[in-house]
Length: 335
Image (cartoon, rainbow, N blue to C red; front, top):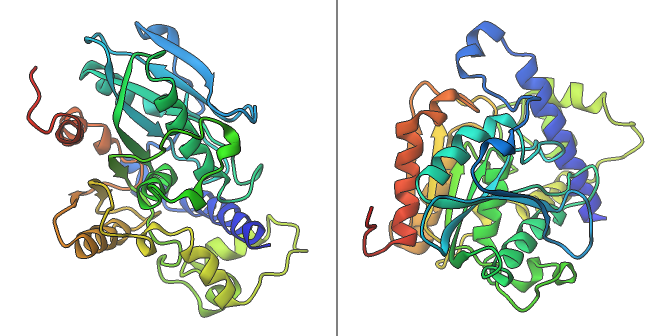
């Protein structure tokens, strides 16, 4: 029952986020709006890529990945890219991801861009199980794909950033695995986490009405609650506030940080109205507090909103890839 409740919450929140962003002043937000489009990456334009690789023995069509290869000496260092989805849509082949993938490949990384099941299709924590299964698949098959899987860095965007943080938070915690998906003898642990415009605390959103908070336990604008509830069948009775809160905390990486949390780079737009910047600020503080060392790095991009084109600025992407280099090349990278 709790899994069903959380799945409903994520679907409700995802729909609400979409409606909220659609309802904002278009002119005010236009300079920041590069939300995922309905255009797709032409994979044939890449020199070397393998597409739609199934990573789970379950055989769900959403459990697939594309691997883009660099022109570098083998084996390749690898970045696992997790797209945003509002938890119920999104696609690894979305055109908005292409500039990031191209820069990663140009800088010498193999990029495993993954899809995962939507919250409409499978209840939480299915999405986390999928991401972990993808990591295990890459490790088990690293020789087949010429990958150096000793150190794997995950790079998540928006709700994909939430998944990336959950991967870091659940390193070596078997209760968060679904080993029926295969490759159960290898680890799903990640050695680094990069998050763009991510979400760390599902219980903490911008100010909303008391009535809305009492209904589902979020601090989110009343507009989201009203319009989102209109899209569900109305037959589902929300549980008590305390029960919602407990479920949400169990899916919020900020409440799961331990001293072994992997190195993490949090990048957020100062003007993000979808997932406010404080989501990354709070996560940054919590990681460094619990680790008692500067394990997390925070970078705030001025005048950037959610999915801002400023994230795709070449200097910005290269700066973030340079951070990844520190994980993969601790003694320095020879170029």
